[in-house]
Image 1 (tube, rainbow, N blue to C red):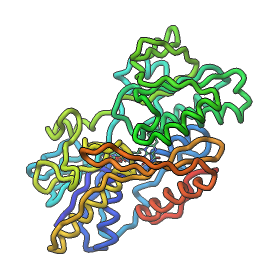
Image 2 (cartoon, rainbow, N blue to C red):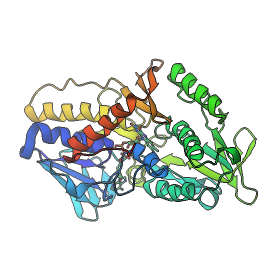
Image 3 (cartoon, helix red, strand yellow):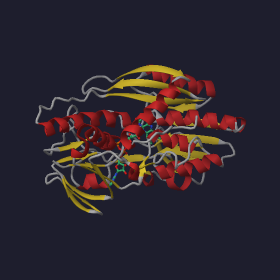
Image 4 (spheres, helix red, strand yellow):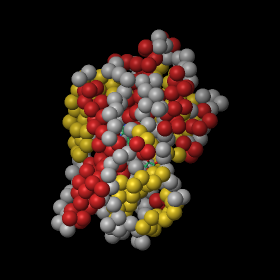
Length: 382
Ligand SMILES: Cc1cc2nc3c(=O)[nH]c(=O)nc-3n(C[C@H](O)[C@H](O)[C@H](O)COP(=O)(O)OP(=O)(O)OC[C@H]3O[C@@H](n4cnc5c(N)ncnc54)[C@H](O)[C@@H]3O)c2cc1C
């Protein structure tokens, strides 16, 4: 039985490696991605602030050695979810079971002025360009702004503000600088009041200006101001933006989306098409767009496929749980254990911030690199 997985990100890699671990060379898994390799989302922050090189954080698919997985580097140009057939630059692929894990694309062009006058830091290319701008920054007003919801890793803009503050301090630029963060949420980490309070306390401590419930609608690049949805304007010398997110075009053109994302059963991750699953950021499953949730969904799908391959009853069910790390700067981290269950108020329990959790997060990245690529890897240069 051939399993074709579209997208080798957090979710796709996890389904593939779980099937490989369980079935070895007998797993007939085709994993397709257009990229040269995988980069953890959090590694973009490491690159941006000069803590790791772009080369260090790239996990090349060519290095994958898991038995039973055939990796195909190609762009997927069409998906037929009824026939379970996909078209790629390397030809068509037919599947018995299709798993769509194509993530969310970012589109900075739809926010006026962002491409011309600011830096998005959510793509690998954007994070690399932002790293150069930050490295050359001589101090001034830094604005970090979110343009719309949903967006990946809701803590990331707050982490960026805190790491920016640390960067300015270590460069001796704090006296001539100011950091502001605008976000369309009323709290930095909405499901966890404790985590939000800790982040807001850290902002207050460092003099970081917090603009809640406000999205950045555009940049007036002539006047160098960010225009917010609440009508206010924030002057900037350096603008770091979270761009608009959308499902990859190939998924939209396949007619699989409703209100922008693929609807799935929140417990089984099945789509409305038989034998077609969707996981991670490309779905509207109800969890935030983050790797830990894509991974939790991947475990359910891998278990469901494994049961099917063994002729057993499929009883795996998604629990909506994930552990997110939050960088506070100065080598301190917190983690929030969050659960999103359909129809219930999400909950989040905070641990930290503390220095001990740095090793915890490094282990998180290292374990995944080992599982997915069979490599030994240290995530940051901290
Ligand atoms: C700055 C930042 C920090 C983050 N920090 C964290 C964190 O600390 N913890 C956490 O859990 N999450 C974090 N995230 C979020 C995390 O990176 C994503 O939510 C996660 O990668 C989603 O997994 P996914 O499998 O759904 O999609 P992705 O990992 O995005 O994978 C999708 C894959 O599909 C491929 N693809 C798309 N379209 C095509 C096509 N047409 N043809 C071929 N291939 C295609 C892409 O190349 C990509 O490899 C962060 C994100 C950012 C930007």
